[in-house]
Amino acid sequence: MKNNLSCEIVRDLLPSYIDHVLSDTSVQAVEEHIRECGACAKVLADMRLSEEVVQENRQQDREIDYLKKVKRRHRLVVCCILAVVVLLAIPAVELIRAVYFGQSVLNMDYDVTVAEDQLAIKGEVPEGHTVKESSFKERDGVLNVQIICEPSAFFRPQKDVDEVYRPKGDIQKVYINGDLLWEKEAGTNMAP
Image: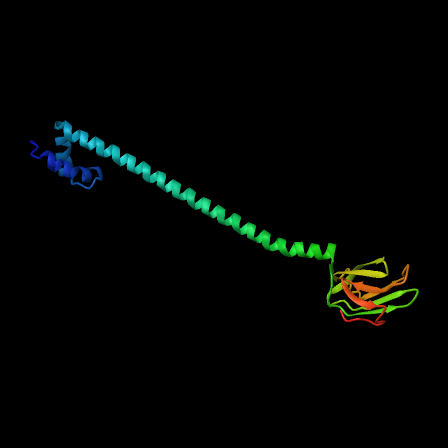
């Protein structure tokens, strides 16, 4: 059988030949031409080689895309975990700070009574709080009282301010949490 196909026609058919879409007769004609024509055989070998490279590149691209998706998912999970930790840490830190360190409650009404031998302070703490501690510092006729409150709880019920202090000297002024509440010259309680 004589092959009448020119190199130009065979080279046009080579992509279809590689993809296995030619009829049996066309496949036989292309193979016969390739056996006789070294130039077309080289073109076919180059096409097959480049097709393998393209397939390898496609496989590498698929693997890289998969790894990028995994990395993105991993980054998202880490960010979500960090966000949850931060959201839980803020109230926990505030609770620990309030429970263990307490805070001064400024908006309280106090009743201060000063006699020669003692000073009595009474006051109601805001709802949901209790007195943690009270400290008295007397210096040069000025008494500084610090009342620290903390949130009340089932194991720490609400307790109002009810303190009695025996001064070491003559008291001229009484400050509670930084506010002047009593002055000897006025002789009465002052509004905070």
